[in-house]
Image (tube, rainbow, N blue to C red):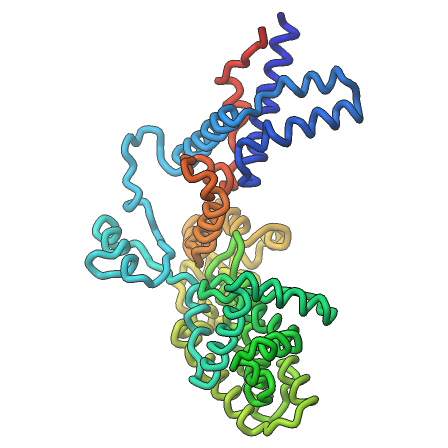
Length: 457
């Protein structure tokens, strides 16, 4: 009886571990019984023996079992978060009064003065600060362009939709690409979602330019003449290049553990590069844009109109970035003491109170803290500083802790679209989503201690 209980307890532990893997992979719960358990049994029989395979068969991985495990783990994660954020004596915690900063997009439902979310929060907590998502600001700043370039972009969308939106056309185009030995056989669909890349779409269009021309000519499409127009192609090459660079910036702004400081640094670096590109293109040097440079070196194109359009777009792009990121360099310079307290200057500390400047001088002279700075993240460093200099450490952490982008929300939404498919439309999503995206692991030891292992009869 003792041996049976031990085996069942191990099976229960394995069931929770496998359920956690299924949830993290965002897979249907039925995959445990339909695939994972049979695969484990086959592996055990092949690599070990039949006795081991029989033990694996005792692991409960049915759809209902996995669902219950995920519910339990999701509840435990929520309990951990609540216990960390709020004292146990609080029965009905007031979230709005605990917020110090909120990061959203600039939609009216969020920022409206009377009915927006921020307005409702400010009624409870007037000191709360609002941050406009850096990634959305980058997307908005890069969206506007001249009518000439906008027409080119619209033409490319029509071409892609003509081929991709009709299954027969997509199959015929794939056959043409295969017959012509193209590396790729499909175009990429365009979308207005700011997280996706126009650069990849336009580069694929240029890569398959010959195949597209053949396909459009065979189907007598009026768009076939576009790919014989060198001026139009020169603009397309520029759009492909500039949107590739914007996509690189957009990707660099995404990710976990970001702060307003490093995201502003990336945007500031992009603005400096954009100024360099504008000066170089104005002088007829297009080496910063490889597609444009390669096309103009091969084709006989009047460069003057191309230079005018490119310089004009870059000028407007820089202006739009400055409008969405006003005083970015000045604001970043004022927080240099947070980035590196060991490289102090009068310019970036003069606006701090004298007491804070004194503490900064003590921190910059502490070799032990300097070693900590070299081996830890910026947040970890200031947590250490706060132990000896609480006021200064608190001020630094107030700059580092607020979310600078809505990346985590967007990532969770993407996870939700993967989990909540039409085949799983009746799924209760909350606990599955929490278990899938939470960085906080469930306390399996605690959960198992409260669970009851079921012994087979």
